[in-house]
Length: 53
Image (cartoon, rainbow, N blue to C red; front, side):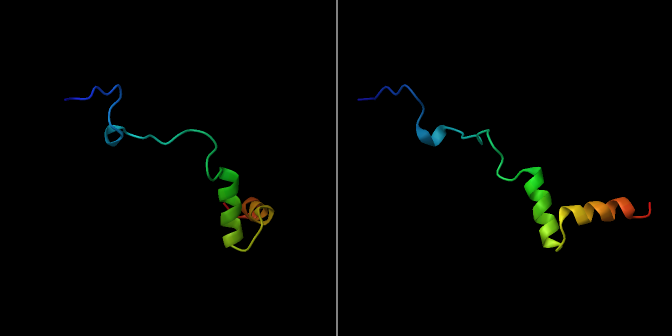
């Protein structure tokens, strides 16, 4: 005897990534990169301003 199901089985559903707060923001990513280089963001900013183009 077949069972009427109002929704598809869970195996058929495609789950999309939900919106909301990103795991890493641009600022956190930037600060992490600066920390790996052993400098602060302010030091890197000054280096970028003083470099020869």
